[in-house]
Image 1: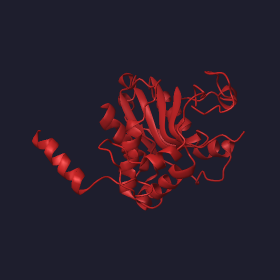
Image 2: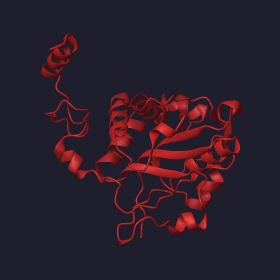
Image 3: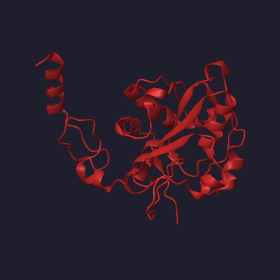
Length: 245
């Protein structure tokens, strides 16, 4: 046994990992942050999804067809993929992370997202990871950018550099909560600018955010990145708001 393995065994014995949500001990030495009981209550995105925005088609017998929203207005990003449906326990966890200013939750959720497999995302084909930026005023209020924390977790796992300075939010927008899709699109229109365009040109980019609601924010970010010369932009988020049918 190596010295490192011995150290890890002692650390695990003295400080066994606890479930992020219920604090019960996790009887595993993997990167799990949820106990089996809580993990079973999470709603993973999978099965029949829109190949563009990644939305679930729970009642559709067919695969690979584009949803009505993406047919009506094709997004600027090549694809968007979410790990979980934004409901139940993960909704509470994200709220405690963002609004409770809890860095422990942030690190755990970043670790979780970095272990999720997205079958149609070939990480080797991407050059750069960029988090959706916060306006400087909101960043000062919150103390951190939740998207950057998630992006750094993905960067470490997939060995893709992350850069948080190339995309800037120049306009302090209204909160998107309570706005419909068109209002959200209008709210974030021209809210972002790209810095150092020469570092964007020809690059395939992973854009990271915490929650995908209508896609207005990530689509506007992708639009600006493509406009600056990016090759293609894929969106990875922790959770996606379920579509009401």
